[in-house]
Amino acid sequence: MNPYPIAFTAAGSRKLVLPARRWRAGSNPHRYSRMPWGILLGLCLATGVVAAQSVESSAPSNWQGPDTPSQATDERGVEPMQVVRSLRVTGSALRPRDSGNSVDVSAAGGCTYNSGGSAFGVLNTPLQLRDGTEILSLRMYYSDTSASNSIGWFTIYDLYGAIVTEFPVSSSGNFGNSFNDSAAINHVVNNSVYAYALNWRPNVAGTQMQLCGFRIFLFEPPDIFRNGFESG
Image 1 (cartoon, helix red, strand yellow):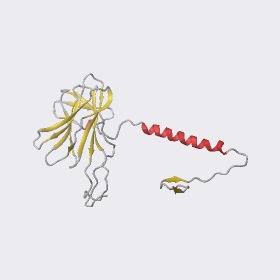
Image 2 (cartoon, helix red, strand yellow):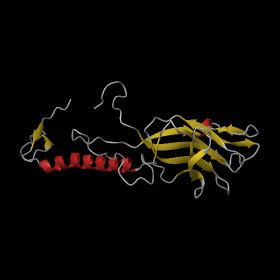
Image 3 (tube, one colour):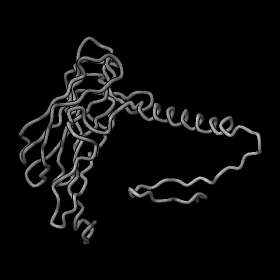
Image 4 (cartoon, one colour):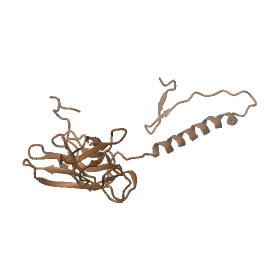
C-alpha cells in the first residue's frame, strides 16, 4: 500500500505528494536532500540500461510496426489491440521423412542433427494452427559451424499432399548459434483446404549443423464467441 497520497494537478496529471521534512535550525537541508534523489536517478538509469538490453525482439525482423499493432475500430468505436504472438517448436520435434535417414539430438535434447543416411534428407513436423490465424513469418534457430547452410520451410499443402507454396529460411550469414527470419508470409490459416508443416534439410551430417527450433510469428483471430460468450 502506498503511504503517500496521489494529488491531481490542474492539467489533470497525477503526482505523488511527499511529506514535508523538518530540519534543525542552522542545518543545510540541501546537503541531505540531494543524496536520495541522486541515488534514485542512478537506479532509474541503471534500470533503463538493463531493460534496453534484449537478446531477441518480440516481433519478426521484417515487422514495420510496434509489437502491438491495432486493427480498425469496431462498431462500438473501440480500437482492439492485435498483439504479435508466436508459436515455438523445438528442433528435436522434427522427424525424418525418409526411413533411410536417422537423426540424433543434442545433450540437452532440444536440437537435432543428421546422424545417418543422407544429409540432404528432409525432417518435418505437422502444425496444428487455429483457423483464421494470420502467419506473419518464420524464424529458425540453429547451430551452424560448417561451411554449408541448412534450410527450413513453412510449407502449405493441399488436401492431397501437393505443395501449394512454401516459405524458406536459411542458416546463411551467421556462424555458431544464431537465428534468421524468412520473408513475410502473410497467410491466413484455413484448415478446411490446407495442411501445414515445418520442414528442414540439414545439407550437412553431424553436429556441425543442428536445428534448435522454429518460431512462428502470428496474429491470432479474435476470441469473440470462442467460449460461447462475447469477449471484451
